[in-house]
Amino acid sequence: MEKTVSAAEANRKLSQLLREVGQGSSYVVTSHGRPVARIVSLHSSQAARTRARKLLLQRLRREAVTKIGRWKREDLYD
Image (tube, rainbow, N blue to C red; front, top):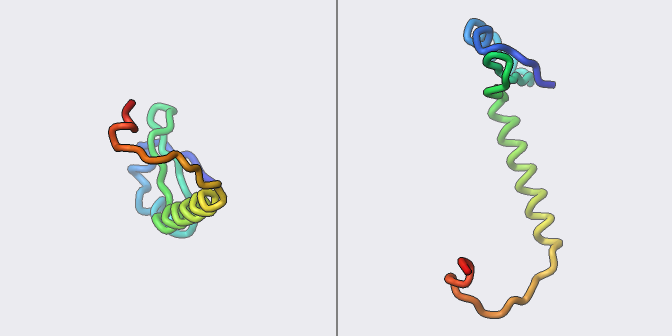
């Protein structure tokens, strides 16, 4: 679950936030009440990318192949 923290508070407590992120927490950093950044674990971010890539490839493999004939690169820009 993401917690919200102001930029000023994140600046004052960065070491503590980083320890908590290492233990699985994540934070949304706000400036003047508006979200501007997210602090998440690098490992969870990589795991999410790996999972998304796997799901995308599975979906693409299920798609039927469409025969469109021969084409040239210039055809893509018409």
